[in-house]
Structure formats: C-alpha cells, structure tokens
Length: 217
Image (tube, rainbow, N blue to C red; front, side):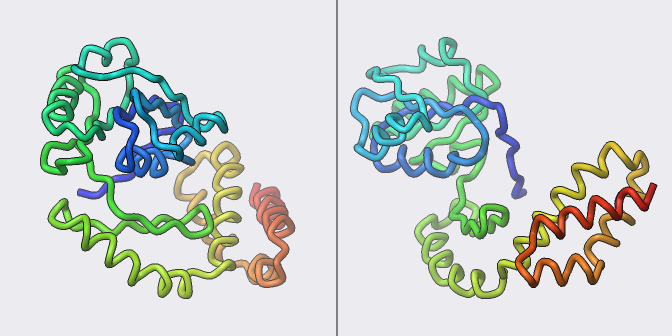
C-alpha cells in the first residue's frame, strides 16, 4: 500500500554520509521535518546542506545501534556502506517502535523511498516497483517526467493553491464536511476564479474564493 507520511515537526535521522545518505536527505528536504545526519565522513553535498542550516550534521563514527536512545528519532534511515551495520540499526529501531529504512535492502525496510517527480512544489508523483527494481523506477521516472510536466500545467498548480487556501479558511467557517465539499466544488467550478488563474492573478483568485465563503455564510 502506498502512503504519504506526514513528517512535519518530526525528527528524521540518517546514518551515513555518502551518496545514498545524500539522496535520502534530499528526499526529506521540504517535508517540514528536522533532519540529522550522523557520520564520521560526509560528502561535500551533505556538508553544504549543513552549512546552509538545512540539516544538522553530527560527526560521529557509528559502529552499533546504541546511539538511537540518544537521538530519539521518529524515522531512521540506515545508509552506511556496511550492510550488517544497517541491519543492526534497522532491527534496533523497530525494537524502539521507530520506522526504519535500509538503503541497501527494501525487503528489510518499514517503508519505501520511491523515485518521485515533483511539479510546482505541490504535486508529487511516485514511481514504485515494490522494491523489485529501483533502477527501473528511475528509468521510468526519466521517461515519464517530460510528459507529465507537459500535462500538468501552471494553471493546474494555481488551482491547487486556490483550493489549498480555500480549504484552510473553510475548515473553521463551515462546520459540516458536506457543506465544505459543496463550497470547494463551487470554488473549483467558478468561472471568475478560472479566468483570474488564466490571467496569472493567483492572489486575486484566492481573494475571490474568500469572498465566496463570506457569501456562503
């Protein structure tokens, strides 16, 4: 089953400092979580992210899973070059009721880290083979990305932004979920909002949705 984890405000810890660790770090950026990398040898990319204050880099040589109780993560990624160490870390994480991922073994992981396509910062499309072939996931992503970027337009992204802002203000203003759906449906179908989006007037489109909510009351 494919799910999307809400990591906002959570603590993610990645053990390892090489290319695999850097890949996992980049997949977590923008998720709203605190990211800590533990390694005694970090690649330049990880060092740059730490220098930019986007992650915390803890320089330490990890030889076992004893560090887990000290960092107390919500999600733990073992991405070292030592398969046995990764196995120990993942097993210990589970004993602590922590979600664990092994970069070297999807079968011994609690969740998948699929190849993704991000469009406009709001649409994410995952290409997933169930761990059967990460290489093919990447290949299919490369083949699909150009096509999907042609299908999902800037106007689609703007409509999502309008729906996002409308949902936020409707959550408190309209107690009934059924009525909120009706309101959001009206926003989606509103010709005035549609024209503003086509004209590149996102803020005005969002304000029009807010005015519609006032009239709804």
